[in-house]
Amino acid sequence: MSVKRKSETTESPLLADGALDTLGCVFQTMGRESFALDTDASIHEFSEHCLEIARHVEHGAAAPAVDIDECEVGTRQWGKIRRFYVDRRKQEKSYVSGRLNDYRGIVEQFMVGLRDICDSNDQTERTVTCSLESIEQALNAGTLPEVERALAKAIGDVGEAFTRQKQGYEQQIAGLNERMDVLRDDLVAAKEETQLDALTGVFNRRAFDSAIQRYINARILLAQPVSIVMIDVDNFKSINDRLGHTTGDSLLKFVADCMTRSFIRKNDLIARYGGDEFVVLLPDTRAANSATSIRRFLDAVHNTPFEADRPEAMSEDGALTISCSAGCTEIRDEDTVESLIDRADSALYGAKASGRNCFKVL
Image 1 (cartoon, one colour):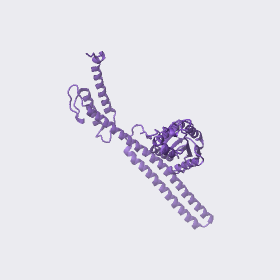
Image 2 (tube, one colour):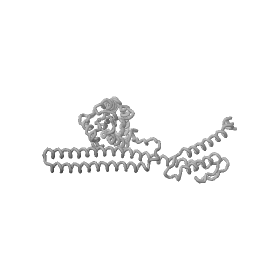
Image 3 (cartoon, helix red, strand yellow):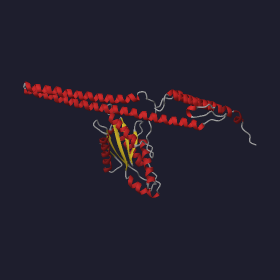
Image 4 (tube, one colour):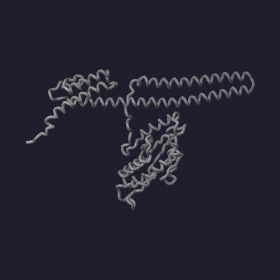
C-alpha cells in the first residue's frame, strides 16, 4: 500500500486554490494594463474579455465573449484559455514590431530630409554666389543697362532658388506630419528584434545594411568618425572544397568567435556579410586608429589552433593553420553605402594582393 506524504494531502488543495487565484489575477492585470490594438473595438472591450476569463479561471463561470461555457465543479476550459492568451501575445508582438519599424522609418526619413536640406542649401548658396558674380561683372563693365539686367536676373534666380528650397522644406515636413498623424498615439516600449546569423551567431547582412545606412544618413549630425572593416577568410574555398562543408562551417564559427574576442567594445557591430566574408562597424574610431583591434583579430585567427575534423587536413602539430585578410576605411561626407563598401573592398583586395594575413587602410 502506498503512503502519501503529509504535504501531498494537506497542501495540494491550498496550492491549487492559490494557483487559480494567481492565474485569475494575471488575466485581470492583463486586461487593465494592456493597450488597444488595431483589431480591438476598444480597450474597454478587451478588458472585459480578460475579466470574464479571470472569473472562469477562479470560479468556472461562463465567458461568452471568448466562447467559454460555464464549467462543472473542478473543470475549466484550459485549451480556449491558452489559445486566447497565446493569440493575444502574438498580436501584440506583431503590433509592436510594426510600430517600431514605422518609427525607425520616421527617423530614417528625418535623416534623409536633413541631407536633402543640406544639398538644397548648397544649391541655393551656389545660385546666390553666381548671381553676385554676375552683378559684379556688370558693375565692372560700367553700363547701366547691363547692371539693370544683371540685377533683374539675380533677383529672379535668387527668388526661384529660395522658393524651391521652401517647397522642399514643406514637402519634408508634410511627409513627416503625415506619418506622425498615424503613429502619434502608438509609441510603445519594446526591444528591437535581434537579427543574428544562424550559423555564426554574429549579426546578419540585414542588420548590417540597416546599421550602415543609419550611419551614412546621420554623419552630418555625428561629431565622431565611423570606420568599417571588411574581413575575408584566406583560401576558404580551397579549405571548404578539400575538407567539406562541415569543416567550412566550423571554420566560419571559429573566425566569428575570434572576432567577438577582438572587437570588444559595446557599440562595435560584427556581422557576416556573406559566405566567408565578415564586416565590422567601429563607431568613434578613425580608420588610422583601428590597427590595434584589427591586428589583435588577425593574430587570434592565425595563432589559435583550429582543429578540423579531417585527419588528413592536420599539420604535424595537429592543427590547421588559418589566416584572414582585412581592409579598413572611414565614412566620408560624400559617401553612399555603395562607395563606402567599394572602398573597403578595395582595401581588402589590397591586403590579399600583399600576401594575405594582413590589412590595408584606405
